[in-house]
Amino acid sequence: MQIHSLLNYKAIGLAFYESKRENSFDRLPFIFKDKVRKEVWNLSKNNSGISIEFLTDSSFIEFEWEVINNFTMNHMPNTGIKGLDLYTKSNNEWIYVGTGIPEGKKNFCRIIQNIEFHKREYKLYLPLYDGIEKLDIKLQDGSILEDLNNKQETKPLVFYGTSITQGGCASRPGSIHTNIISRATSLECMNFGFSGNGHLEKSIGEIISQINAKLYIIECMQNVDEILLKDRLISLVKVIRQKRKMTPIVFVIEPISKNEDLDLEIKKNLTHKNKQLRI
Image (cartoon, rainbow, N blue to C red):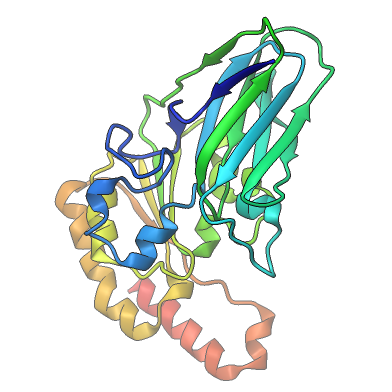
C-alpha cells in the first residue's frame, strides 16, 4: 500500500494561495490574522468550499485525516461538519462517489474499492465546519498519483456571508451551494462564509477586494439587524469599489417564509431590512 500526504496539494477554492497559513487549508492566510475579529479568524480555519483534484489508477482509495477541533453540533451531521466527500469525473461531469464518515478527531475511511484499474480524475471536498491537520491518501502498490493542479485561469466567484454560505446545515461537504455552482460552471468558487458572523464588515471587504473576482455574492442579511445594515452596507461597497470599480456585486435578500406570520415583529424587521438593502 502507498501512503501520500495531500497537505501540499494545490487546493481549489483557496484564495491567496502563496501566502503563509497556520494550517494548509485555512481560508484566511496568516497575514490577515490581526485584520479580522477573533470569531472570524477561528471560523476561517474551517475548510468550507475547498477541494483537491487528483488523478490515480488505483483500484481502491482510502483516506486518513485528522481535524483541528473535532467540532460537533446537535443540528448538523458530522459528515458535513468534519467529513470528506469524493467525486470522480465521467463524461466531463463530476459524479458523487462516496463520503468519508468521521468518528472523531482522527479518522479513516476506504471510500472506493474493487474498481477497474485505469486512470480517473477525482475531486475531494474538505470539511465545512472543521479544519484539516493531517490528510493522507492510501492507494494500491504500483498505482500512480498526480496532483492535477487545476488552479482556474478564469476569474473566481467570491462568496461572503453567513452559515448559509459556509454550509450549515448540509449533510456532506459536496452539497453546499458554492460547491454545486463550481461543479456546474467549472468556475472556482471562494467561500468566505462565517457562521453567525456575516456582519458586512469593512475588513472582509478589504480582503475580498484583493481577489480579482468575476462576481461578488454577499449574503449577510440573517446576521445583521436594520441598524447594522444601515451603518455598514455602503461602507462595504465603497471599500470593494476602491479596488474593483466594475466587478458586479450581488446582494442576497433574506427570504420571507410563511413562518414569519407567527411573529409579526420578526416579519416587520425582515421586511424593513430587505427594503433597506434595495435602496
